[in-house]
Length: 211
Image (cartoon, rainbow, N blue to C red):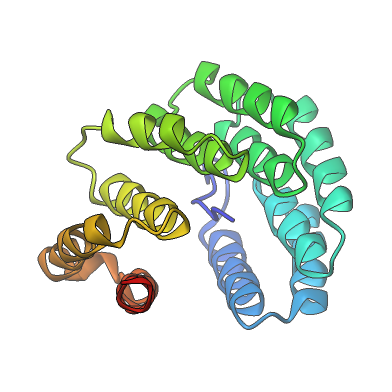
């Protein structure tokens, strides 16, 4: 789930602060797998008119074993907010989770058509769906074509490549990618890539076992 800043235009400072706190609580609830609490917070954020409240609710339903309910929520959200590219992105991700690949690819295309979209990030998510769909070479080629200076997108690309190569037992490629990812962690301490660093070290450990 991609929790992103809310467009706070027209909101008072106190209300902004309350939404920020609620979003932080929701993120923590999801990370600690307290999905019932996350769902409650998602509903509260919806009442506060937080743009990505549907993302919180959908992620909570997925954690509760009901990705179908999450898809319903996100499908309704993109009808109400058709230019919110992150909602389209998350809809595609969740559809791919339950192997509804044609619909997922359509959602990624809709995300690409939105204003202010980050197309490379959409490509990363599309690549992960392709890999889940068994189309590994297409996924690898798509990721190889991503060139950006954005550290977040660089990191997302590397993590996707590492996951796909580990799935394919391509461990000889994984270690170099892990090194590149850890270099980003060191070069951008302000981004707080602790979770990503753990994933990279875990991937390297898996690659060692596959050798």
